[in-house]
Amino acid sequence: MSNFIVGVTGGVASGKSEVTRRFEQLGVFIADADVAAREAVAVGSPGLTEVVEVFGSGVLDGSGALDRVAMRARVFHDEPARRRLEAIIHPRVRASMQAQCATAAGAYAMAAIPLLTEGGREAYPWLDRVLVVDVHIDVQRARLMRRDDIDAELANRMIAAQATRDARLGIADDVIVNDGPLDALAGHIAALDRRYRRLAEEKKTARSG
Image (tube, rainbow, N blue to C red; front, side, top):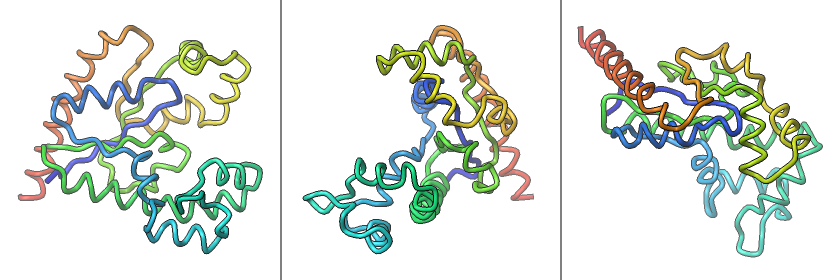
C-alpha cells in the first residue's frame, strides 16, 4: 500500500500525460481524474442516477449512457447547473482516486488531476505533495495549435479558460519545466522519483515511530 501520494497537474498541452507515463514506466501507480470522472457516471452507477434525478433523462443517449455532448451544452452557459453537476461528480472522483492510490503497490502513488489548481489544493487534503508540469505560454500555445490543428485565437481562449500559470506554480511543491525536447524529461523524473521514494520512506518511519 502507498502511504505517500503526489498530485500531478499542469495546463493544457503542458505534457502531463508524458510525464505520468514516464513515472508509470518506473513502476509508479497513476490514478487518472479523467478516467475516474467517466467511471463516476458510468451506466448503472449511483452517480449517473443522481445526474438523471437532477437534470432529467434528456441527458442520456439511446443506450442509457450519459450523453456528454448534450450535458456539456446543458451546463456550458449555465453556471448554477455546472456547479450542480460538479457537486455530483467531483466528490466521487476524489474519493475514487484517494482509494486507488492508498491501495496501490509501491512506495508512492500519483494522482493526475488536470484541474487541481481550479478546484483548490484544499479539496485534496490527502495529497502529500503537488508536482506541476510547467511550460511557457508561447510553447504551450504552439503545441496546442499543432496538436489540435487550431488557430492562435482558439488556443489562447483554451489557455485562458484554465487557471493561470502563476496560480499553478503557487500550489507547487515540485516543478518540471517541460519547454524542451522530451529526452530532457528523463533526468528530472529520475531525480523526483528518488526524492519521492525517500520522502515516502521518511513518512513511513515517522508513522511507525
